[in-house]
Image 1 (cartoon, helix red, strand yellow):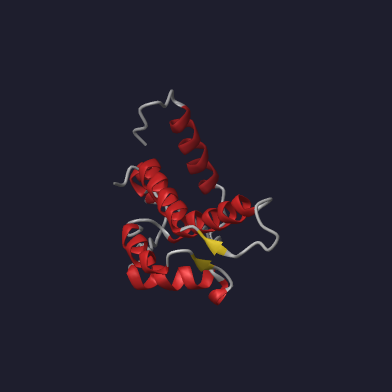
Image 2 (cartoon, one colour):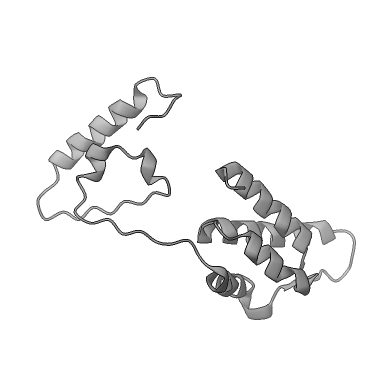
Length: 143
């Protein structure tokens, strides 16, 4: 909508989408998703009969996500006691952002071991995960 670096392109895109909506058959179902609803043009939002909002995960949901991502114990943290603090620090991020940072932490932890040991351990560096969460929050403007 009011994107300060827009040079008319955003309005053209919105108008094109609105025109495409006009050509849809009545029995069409359109599903759209955004994590920045405030940037979507009001005329476009009015075209949808229903809007469903998904809440960000709370501490318990983040714990479940971490457990699923870790394949029920296939991967372990180097400092298990600090995991709860990192989970609390991750509050305010989406499921996607949390899982993305955790998967990246797993990859970095594995890559850091390459060439250093014969038996690569499936241990995740909690400091790397926390750093990635900080970067994600900063990139999203959440502090």
